[in-house]
Length: 454
Image 1 (cartoon, rainbow, N blue to C red):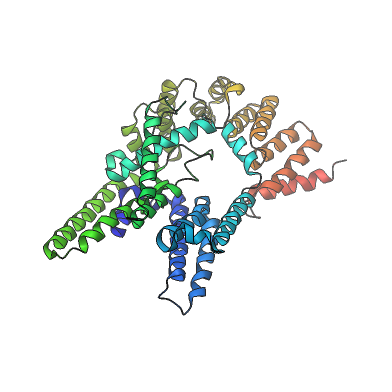
Image 2: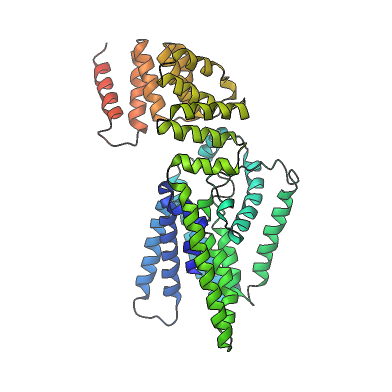
């Protein structure tokens, strides 16, 4: 089962995609913490038991610091304690329950401190999304059901960096929302019912859903990404382990041999599918061309493909893909801004401004769109529009350091030195880059020069 999990084509996004290696790192610390806890609770081990407990806590803290989905770890450990060691009634009568509750509360506190002003951040981030919190929660029922189907049939043709998912507007719109919810409830209910007869399978089912909770509930994240299955899929393959253990315990040697051959063939097939899937990860363009093949009418895929072309200096292809994205979604803002920036970088200022003027600020919910509009208007010399655009970006994202810096430049050009210094001070406060970053040095120089202005 470990071989099937590690070679599954679904894991390519968490492993091959460099920026998501935090997912695999967090999963490693998560697993190490659980393993250390199991060793600590093992009655066969007496020497060094508290060393295992120290390892459990240390790995848990490292997991928390790596990625936020690890904050569900105390709940997973509590379920293991109940299902695989002593049961709820015995746990309830002992002080260990309070220890688990304290650990869980501690994890929540760390999460809250790590994400200062969590509620405010959620509100601000949802302002940039085209779905509400309720719509996201409802849609995630269908997303989880889709992920289950991917685990059952992980063909490369069913995998993509981008999946086009219709929002669930209510429990019956679309009807598959209710069906997905009933499917999930049925699986969880079965897991609880199997607690005594099949504790291992029951535990791994709960593992799957618990480790999906943080990224598949109320947080204003993208609706679906395959890398989110890296840690939860351990639960899926763990469920398959339960019947295999039963068959391997049978006295029939030939049956065990046949089962081992089937398992080996399954691993080989998984390796081949993963090899095929990795071919599309050659560069950004091949990745988005693969997504385009699966979702040819997606304006988001066209926009991302165009961005990939632009980054590799294939500007004619980039412009064509941006225009196709706009054709597919005439109200789309990101593709228009990107096309305007492309025209700006090619010296076609009037065309860049024309595309920028097609965007109504009332429709913009993404601070990065406002930032790029500010860049275009500043280049044109329309400083009022530039200042307005940067200010809109900061209203939506108050810690947007680059917008602070560019707004300071606009104030400098209009000789509003007081506001300029305020912007540069704010930039230096929020910037998280290295101390020798070019923008940091420029801002420090501006602040020093403005301090001399009376």
